[in-house]
Structures are given as structure tokens and as C-alpha cells.
Length: 79
Image (cartoon, rainbow, N blue to C red):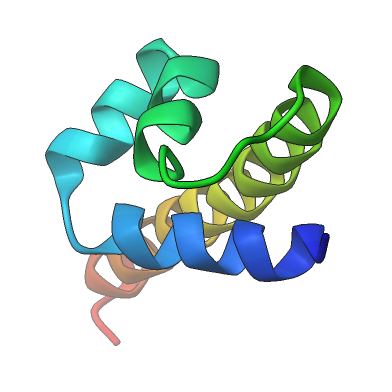
């Protein structure tokens, strides 16, 4: 089973819905199970997917925060 492919699939579904992102942050295992319900996944695989998706979401959140911070700095310094 290609876990990276499943992580990409889950991320694609999460990117289309802020509600799903919030649900994932609250209950990551349950959200992954529901998004990939057509597959029979064991708990170890689900945990690996959750870890991968969480890492990717964390990077995106940090990038968004950094972009916002830089925009505020530019505005503050008038550039």
C-alpha cells in the first residue's frame, strides 16, 4: 500500500474544506478513517497517514503564519 499516495489523497480532500481541516485537527484518526472509508486500513497505516498529513498541515500553517507576519512587517515599515 502506498502511504504517500494516501497522504496526498487525504490532503487533497482537506484542502477543499476548512470544516474538514478543523475536524482533522480535532479527531485526526476518525477523519482519516471517514475520508478513506472505502479502504480496509489497519491502525498502523492510519497512524502513519495521520502523521504524514499532520506534518504537511503543520508546514502549511507555519508558512501561512510567516507570510502574514512578513506582510505585517512590510506594512509597518512602509514598504
